[in-house]
Amino acid sequence: MRIIEEQKFRHEQPDSGWKRGVLAALRLIVGAEHASDDPAALRRYTCSTAARSTVPLAVVRPGTQAEVVALVRLAGARTLPLYPLSTGRNWGYGDACAVGDAQLIVDLGRMNRIVEVDAELGYAVIEPGVTQQQLSDYLHSEKLNWWIDCTGAGPDTSFMGNILERGFGHSPYGNRLQHVSGMHIVLASGEVLATGFGHYPQARAAHLFPYGVGPFLDGMFTQSNFGIVTRIGIWLQPAADCVNHFLCTMSEHEDIGPVVDALRPLRMNGTLRSIVHIGNDLRVISGGRVFPRSLAPDQACLPPAVRGSLREAAAVGAWTVSGALYGSAAQVAAARAAIKAALRGTRARTAFLSERKLRWGAAMARVLGSSRPGLRLRAQVGLGEALFAMNRGKPNGRFLAGAYWRRREALPPGFPHKADPALDNCGMLWISPVLPLRGNDVLNLHTLVEPLFAAHGFDLFVTFSMINERALGAVLTIAYDKEDEAEVARARECYQAVFESVMEAGYIPYRVGNQSMAALDPGGDVYWNTVARIKAALDPDGLIAPGRYEPGRAKGLVAGGTG
Image (cartoon, rainbow, N blue to C red; front, side, top):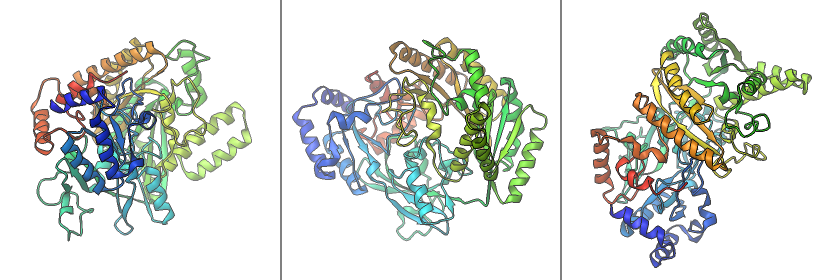
């Protein structure tokens, strides 16, 4: 507990000689311009889409692994808590905020080197600050026949940061952690650990065979605070000869169950290689607009009539299923036939999109102009173009629009360029339970949580994603107005009620926000006790990311967070 007590002391005395000495030492390591405790420099590390934020001690931005090593050694000498982040765009789960106050933010965004790309075997070695856009642009500029897997979190998000949180994307490589081979990690001792075969200087397959020889350690450094990952090898996706996209819509809520069950065999036998996303009507509607306050004044929920009219304008049903088909023209044609056959006994309406069909749709939208059919077709074409870009490894910020749903202002000028939901004062809390890939579980989870959202005055935004062949990852979104204190309070209460309900029902989240770190181990089980023993062995002073996926320590830190 020594580190927590010192944190509180230092946070209460920000002008102490101790702090001045720390800043001077930090500046000797990274340069004066890359270490600061100025409130303006710290602003983005105190802003969060969650209804809770923390106040850091300072921020330091190393540019090399050697500087990270020097920072860790300084932290050990000064008992200084460090909170590393890649680019700080962990939307909905904590953004760029530390778990507790008075931690030193180690922003790795300057470490943005694409160290190596192997054009023959299709892998890249990157640093934490490399963004989706940067790696995509590099592959395009070098005319390499490889694509990245994209997420919908925006072009400026860190590739590595998402992987270390075990996030997922859209393509056949969407289960991202399965396509990682070889890490460099700075430990609390200042040593640099190379995983897999990477610790053998002569190894020729360090980024080709992830397991190496001996215990497989890589997973220990995801969703943990055991070290600071400074380099990672990732496999790239071969560019496909043909890509189609399919969209299935269902008019009625209960029709989603049979569709999930019909598509499961295709996911399991490899017909559906990409991650398939299933979103309710609000997830589609919120992709291009904010809450219509003029139609629903003083309300946080859409009245049924308004929701119905927005659904009609967007030409969506209660649910939309979205996925991509990759391969040769013959393979894609066979997959289309298999999907049609599988869904024949359901109430799904299925459409397949090709780039040629999108071009035709765009031309028709121009002909129809600003008429109602023209606007509807233009919206559909825009969605299709964004999906195709992401399926081909070109990140698109369009899907960040949902984060702005309850923001009082419209989408910011130039959206989605440089969109930052935290700095733009968006309110958004995510709960991400994992459930069996069965239609009954989809309907059961929805039945469990929808009344809780309604009781607290919020519409339920939900996406289910087929993250592998046997499981669905759900994202339940509480979108709220951060400028309305009563709504903020309700959002917190709703989050807690939903989180406790899904945990009790056995739908455990696959990742959590900072506010829930302490709730991961309510009973002191063997798993988390083992995690604590590993932490004590690797980081006995608790220097790196105190409280992050560390329930015992988080209990003391979370209470200190500010609203």
